[in-house]
Image 1: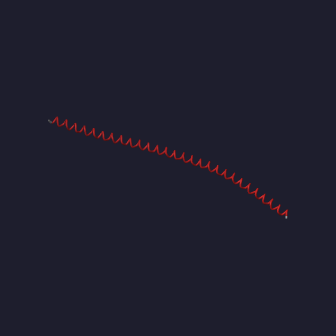
Image 2: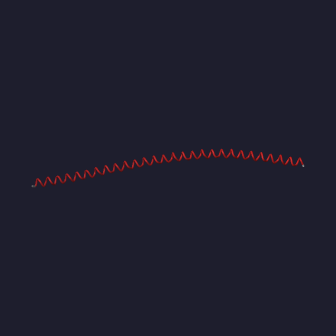
Image 3: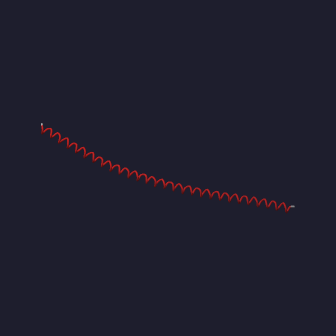
Length: 103
């Protein structure tokens, strides 16, 4: 009977060691999974940051191009207005001179 009790005690101790080993293995697996998850998160955050940077540069570039086009159009329109003003001023001066000469 002592032999049987000894076998039970040894089996219980072996089971306890197996449970402890399994617990340690599970903890290692969980730690590795957490580490990998953190790496993936960091990687995706970097990708997202790069994506935002590229999109920002694209938007700024498009805005710069649009602003340049508007500036050119404004310059052209201003030139037209100045030409009209000068033509009207010339016409006014001619009209006044004709008035003065005819009176």
